[in-house]
Length: 122
Image (tube, rainbow, N blue to C red; front, side, top):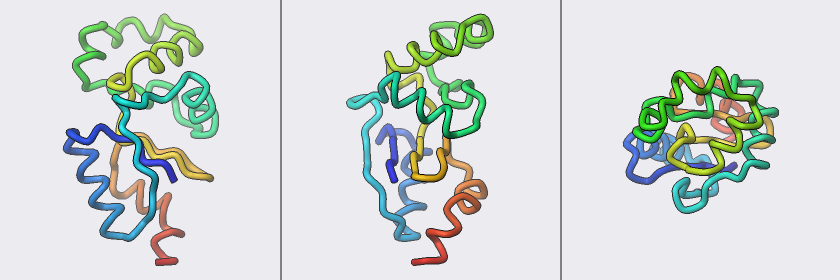
């Protein structure tokens, strides 16, 4: 399982602690130093079943600076994916990429539901 985070992000820190407490193993990836590629984002988006907007860090400074709230609805999915691939700070985090699911952000209840099988095995 891939855990994509920005280490200074308090939500990422909480999520990492949550995983560690449950002894769920993951590979760590710093989103600003190793931004997801357009190909990765496209694959994860398709596999996730989530709306593409869920992959954007809508509370981030970069999102606000670029005025994306108004621009995204007018952009094609391809253009949105290209934009996401330009800067890790635009991507919602933490981002979990597992074999059978993708999670954006940290909502404990959602994580417990998706990782229930992993939790029961430990």
